[in-house]
Image (tube, rainbow, N blue to C red; front, side, top):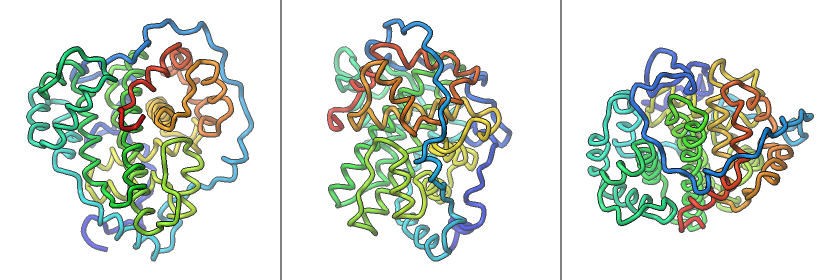
Length: 379
């Protein structure tokens, strides 16, 4: 191996507890306690979100570890034979690096210093992405009055974070292409889930009064990068295998490990290392899916609430795109009580920063609003 891909087998899976603030070398404060350097404009409200929540939902009951989780061993690159790891490295090198604009959007200076004019100029320099952003924000799902014809209008109406994350989604899309129609469908569905999950994370963080609601939403979006990579690798090298679609995470992880030897989160870590994204950012993104098997007391100190909000938003968005998301609070509660994907989440919901989240989740109309935000192509 050469260049930035050297050292995959050694140290690629260090689960650093260091925080992330888009490339800052010092440890970042948790998103829910961070004093935001730049005010974050409000994201567009989810439909029907103004309906008052039901009163004082009972805490989730403790449960024994489900057998499906107890039997799952989370695989890492150091668990793979060197020949298999090298094969994955070669396959991941074949995935085109995303446009330079993605690195700019994730840079420290842009996140903390850029204004709406800077974002508009960056998007205009990527015409294909600009066209997709305008198509997205002009869709009926956003409920915007009139026609949005300029990026500056979109930023004014939706806010910088919403437009920035839509840009990130479509910039990532440019790296994932396939002549296999099954893979193309999976890419579209996973991309839509990443967008919905990032929007939901920002909405929930705002309602929890977190100072930096944009950080969790970006973690959600980037956590789908490994799932996109897994689809591409399976389509190219294991054409007979079922390709991943958004829905429950646990069976997806099992399939990925059985076919590729690694879960999507670890593939995403390797891929983003090859793209030379900020190391701290890569570490934090890799934690999101890992909450499937991680109890709250084993999560990085100070970051558990941030990761839990991102994890929950991603998993609910998965189900919204799959069409399996409950549309009423009682059904949602049953899902959270019984589905293995949410087993460890119960411990995180007891954290002070998330104490109001169970009540927010039971807001009538919240999940219907998430369903309504799906793009027509994903419906």
